[in-house]
Image (cartoon, rainbow, N blue to C red):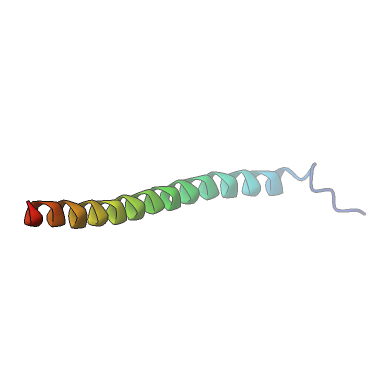
Length: 56
């Protein structure tokens, strides 16, 4: 008796559920990276803006 992954319905359902969860987690991770990058850019912008306002 061989174990055929493609024809195992229960296994395919579990894999489909895991794929949905993986996509959700990947989306959350991407949003996290975007917010970190935006925060760093905001700090840099604030530093330069502060320097220019102080020197003006």
